[in-house]
Length: 250
Image (cartoon, rainbow, N blue to C red; front, side):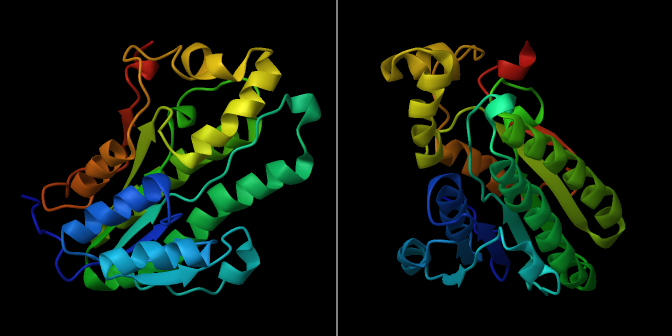
């Protein structure tokens, strides 16, 4: 039986309409939190929220100037929204690089900035940043994503240091490839840049560095997120928690 240790808490999950975000939203709702699904896809967000008795925040997080003056009522913030582009640096679209930095670095900064005053006032807050094994290691052809995830790691640690005296924790979760639409969409691009058939991408590219040869399930990431915001994690902050099948053990 799921522990209901989040009754009365308000959780905002970005990219919450699918994949890791949806799994996190379900985990937090099952533990009693009121969940706000923040997503670009308003219809998908509404469908997700309706199953969780939650609410929808239809938002384009890449429009970062619109977030500058935001005030966010959240006890729990899960920064999950992200996209991927795969190409060599010499062919990488500069605007795609900028887009990924806005969505995956600037937006988490602005959301943390918007949420901290309320968390400080309440003397309690939990920030979970969905990073990646690519926040700790690099892979070729993913310059924008790897750059953004490394930056997110630094952002999370600064939030941890500043939030500590106010009862606010901030941590990263670093999964390997997760079975989500984001990963599935990479297969064609990965096959092209590596010159292999699409049927070989998962085995030869995605699982090659992992000792455990399978994709991570979204629910596995969500389970750790649930613990990081729960009753027993007050001393857990400024850290990066791998769910990578041994990738970063190398």
